[in-house]
Image (tube, rainbow, N blue to C red; front, side, top):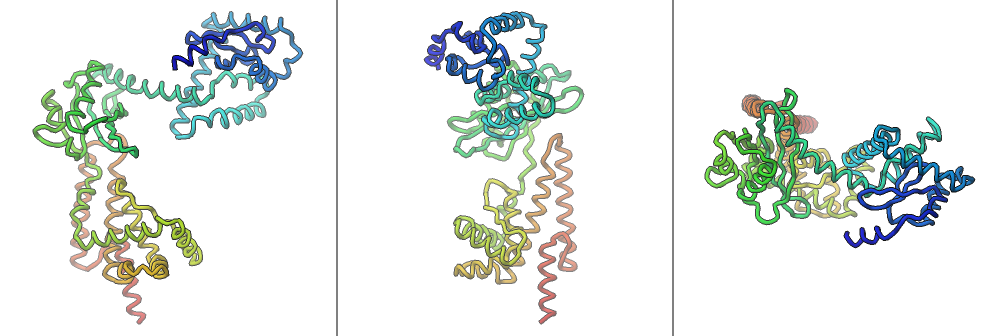
Length: 452
């Protein structure tokens, strides 16, 4: 990077550049060129006559008849405007920078490539302004920097500024205490990432914000997590005494009464209240499923993987569903990380059980014959679909902002009471409306029996 800057600084501004309407400007101790017509600043690498001629011919062909004296007077006026911080130029420059940050924010939220602003949004915006308002207002858009490098820098600036704002709000709060929630997860590159969220009081109301995300480069022990969080608090001069609560997941590094993370926090401050995350507890409960239900679930996953792992099988199955006029022929690929995928995949397989049975018979996959042909296996599948759908509904209801421990605990307790009620109804009349797929399969079986 230093070598590049040294090469850039060797390029000097020349008076010959004025014939195409360019004057010099110093930004970040680097001399660059600025168009006196649209005020656009080009990079130092573009300080060449052919680059300036291209800019002049493509954007300002109507000024081709102007002489050098005209551009010199424009350059003098531009330099005077720079010195006037309350003038029109300064206000336009501030507005252009603000618009550039707004664009970068929208770009980051939409998760689009950084080049989309320069290649798509700017031409579209200029076209809209030209048609709706007029050509004279199009030049104002040229003052906004849309390049991919600028968008990247703007996003980096906002990423660095967010923790600073959160820390400042915590310090300036009337009651400078806060709680934090930690989650340690592994990304697609197999790197362990520590995410920390905080909740504090701001303007008389609770506010939740993302604090930071840092990689755990070596081990992921409780001491590593504690040191990472502690270094941030120490860097910002925040004491552990200001922490009133810590919420962690059920990972081994987080729990424990002696050497785990919550114990290390309690050693720093006895006021901290430790809680465990109430979301995704059903993942642990799933491990206690009876063996026969586990076998059915594994068979369903194997069936879906057989269809989706091969592009040819996926196309053939889609074609079969289209011939049979099946409205929903999409099978989700099972993902162990995502709990919600388990409920969706079971639902789709159950709804497409007849089509899957026909397709697997054509492929001579006899190991799946009992799964879709045996009534007992179908009842187990329908039961799993209903149970996982109920758990997914509970999972989604527990998520969202401004949720408290009391709200989550109340929803968990009501869910348990609902299961107990369904169990009592099932013991009395052998069916319940709480399990709609199992009930529909039962009714279908009764109708087929009466028909025979």
